[in-house]
Amino acid sequence: MDLMMLPEFIKLALFMAAVFISNIVQALTGFAGVMISIPPTILLYGPDMAKAVINAICWLVCAYLMFRNRSFINRKELLRIVVFMLVGMAIGIHLYNVVNQQILVPLYGAIIVGVALKNMIFKQGTSPLPAWIAIPVLLGAGIIHGMFASGGALLVVYLVATFRDKDSFRANVASVWTILNLVLMFNDYQKGLYTPEFFELLALGVIPLAAAVYLGNKIHDMINQKMFNRLTFGLLLAAGSMILI
Image (cartoon, rainbow, N blue to C red; front, side, top):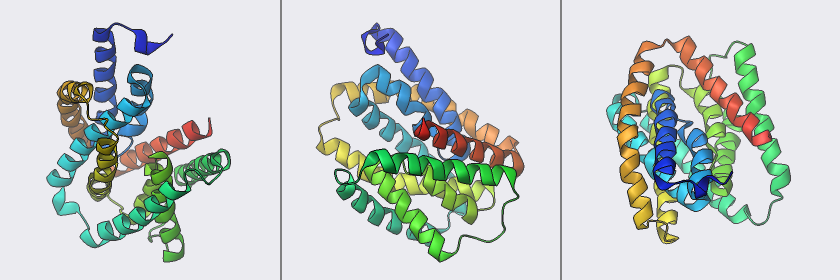
């Protein structure tokens, strides 16, 4: 069934439900909201509109989380992440029409699944990633984000090894997306995607978004570190599996 042919009020209801569910997770962990909300929104409004609206909604959530949890931000680490990812994004944008995506995408998915399973099965180490691993991971996250706007899972691989408590993890991952999503939003603006339909969807999306952020924050405060880690690695596993499928 073509969901784009549904009556408008049903499409809007489904869109608002997707925003609500995905942003409970986004507010709870600081990531994965886009991964959850993009697929149904694409089916409802097409890839260009879905990307533009969900990017803007994600930015609103992340900017709020960044401000609310600013005391947990490691500014030195944040600068390092943003610099390497911006370099990677520039490379990824250039490579988009050069690299064989049929090879790169499954490899990316396999790496994410492997890391998620490792951390779910074995005890996490207590030291951060060494530079010779950390830098390629950050560059790779930027490259994937520049090519497919979905480098978040690989970034989480770096963040889970760097930030050991849930508040620092959430604050810093939200800060990264607050900064980097501005690049994506500027590209969407240049493409002419900020149409009346975009602003209508954004305005309607703010309603379930506010409720989702409130609920996600409540759950974040209620769960312990062990449960937070399980949720994080479960989302990583889901992200990698979706890429492989």
